[in-house]
Length: 90
Image (tube, rainbow, N blue to C red):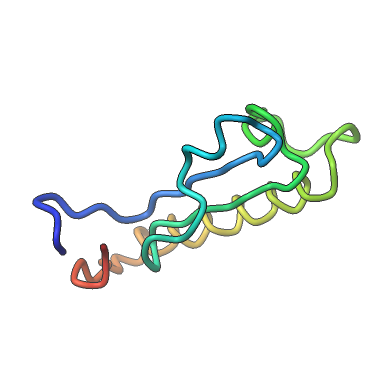
């Protein structure tokens, strides 16, 4: 790890219709520091916390599924005691 502190299991989300998205992390930085981009997403449309609704666009609905699966896998890894190899990060 090139940084003094290694980080793993971080998920950045970006609604690309949000003007702030240009300053966000839009590409995976490692195998456990991930970025998801939502073409039709706007500011906070991916962060409602209530799951997909009938008003969400298809990419936001898929995003909820992706986020759920990623977090489920990470939690499963922790539960099973799998430790990430920090040498693979940044």
